Every structure is written in C-alpha cells, then in structure tokens.
Length: 405
Image (tube, rainbow, N blue to C red; front, side, top):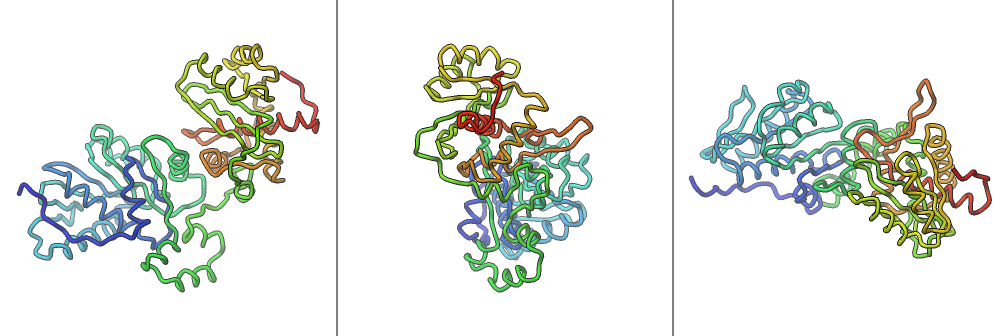
C-alpha cells in the first residue's frame, strides 16, 4: 500500500491544536487535568507514525509506570483506531508487548518509565512522555537519547507538580526561548471555553479542593515549594511592560562558557528598560556591544575571573563602570538585596525569559552557608544582571555605601 489510508480522527480544539502541533522539535505542555493533553498527543503520535513511518520504525508513548501505559495509552490508542477503522484492515496490535503496528510497518510502542534501562538502545522517530512530572528524570534522559540519530520530535506533557523536578525545569527552558523548544499551557478554563469540560465541574473542584491543589491540577500553576528566594507571588506582582523611559543604571553579567552575557537597564523608577542577552561572541564584540548599550549610564559589571580584564577595558571607554566579584558571600548579599526589592515592588520586569529565570532560581542551605543558583542545566545570567542593576541603582540613590571592587 503506497499511499496512506485515510483515518477520521478526533478534531482538537484550537488552543490544544496550537500546542501539540507546534513545529518545534521539543514541545513542553503544562496542562490541567481533563484539558485534552493525552487524547491530543495520542492523535499526534498516531499521525506521526501513520504519515511518516515505515517498516521497523519505532514511535514511543512513555507513561510513569507500565500499567498506566497499558491502561491509558495503549487502550485509548486501540479504541481510537477501532473507531476510525472498525474493520481493522490497516493495523494490528500485540496485547502482551503493548504495540500497535500500522499499515506502513511502523510500530507505536507503549512503555513504562519505571524501568529506565529498557528505554535505551533503540532509534525512535517520535515520542510522547505522559505525566512527565511523575516520571523519573532518567526516563527523559533515556528517551532523549533514542531521538538523537533520528532527530525525532517529542512532546512532554502533564500536570504541574511543584517546582523541584526536571519537567518544571525543562518547561522553563522552553518558556525562555531555548532554540528548537516551545512551551504551552492548557488550563481547565481553556477546555471549558472549547466545550470539552463542564464549567460547573471546574467550579465544584475549586470549592472542595485546597487552593494550591486546585491551582496545580486545574490551572497548571505550580505551588511555591519554598526553594525560590524571591517568592513566586512577589515575582508575579512585579511583572510590568518594558519601560519606554531612558535607563539610568545597568547590571551586566558576563558569559562564562555556554552562559549568556546579560544586560539589564533600569529607569529611574526601577522598571526594566533594557533587557538583552547573547552568547557565542568574542570578548571584543561583547565589549563593543556593551559600550553601545550603556553609553554614559552607570553600570555594575561582573568582574569575576575572566571578567576582570573585560571590566578594565570597559572602564577605559565608559565613564561610570564598577566591577563586582562574585563569591558565595557577595552573591548571597546581592540576591538578598534583589529579594528585598522584589518583595517591596521596587523593581519591575517584563514577562519574558527574565521572569522565567526568576521563577526557577533557587537557594539551598548547606554546611558552609546559603547557595543561590539556577537549577542544573538552566541559566541565571539575567537574575544576576538584574541584581547588579538593583545594586547600582541603590548606590546611585545613596541608600547604601558600597565599596567599588
């Protein structure tokens, strides 16, 4: 059979379709319960295998445990295919090994994330990780490795479940605009608007469930688990459009290795007026770009390690540049100053990659003190630049006496 047979599949609602059919290779969807994420991604995976698959090509559905892959993913896929082609002429299935084989020889496998060693080795052409916050991070690593040779797409979906998990961090990377990634959110009210969920059911859940549970399950809003030094609500309260007023101070965090150089400028009211970042350029180009942005403004620049000679070059060309060396102690003081400004709403910032960095920033207590940083694999360059800008503004206002390092 050379040409793909036609299947009549469920039609997604507009926002559901926009999320699942996003052209990005890695799409992370934080979604409410009963918002259509599972049904939509089953349809997406079937379309991938049906339209692009061939003999021996594998497509995966991965659930937190094997029994869930069987009872939800596998069972619903068979039901979907049965309704679309009740004579079963163009597909078959194996109930013990949990696979469906299509007209073109492609197989959709249904697997559990509870045995991650079994997820390595095969080349996979498209995958879905269902209920990702309940899957082990090892499962994500394994699934991602199977997509390497094929450059296959993946959909990572599920309810939110706090902030200290790999799926939350991956979502923030996607939300921050990481190349080849996309982020979407589907709430219960999106499903209500589309007519696939009853409004009274959502309101009943809102009445009887604790607020933080309702927000996670129905609004896809993760609870603040105490690891964020700024407070998630306080961050939300400081969201504001980028200022059109001229910036008077800048904070600049210089790139280290694969990090970004981030430049944040604040106006006289503490609102972000410049919010830029870049990486992959040489120091000469970086210095030139910073000079063009800062001009006569006051700037506090990261002078740690390789940043020291860069600051010296900047000071030769810019009249008001100070260096700031990061140590565990100085970073703690700097972040505590930023936290105080956010709590008092003395600084405001746009709802973009900078806000995403603030959301995932965390601290932990150790034997040697408090450690502030982004989760492993994420960036905090914008947070550091914002904190440096707040410090520069405080100094300029004469509120504190700082020593230029």
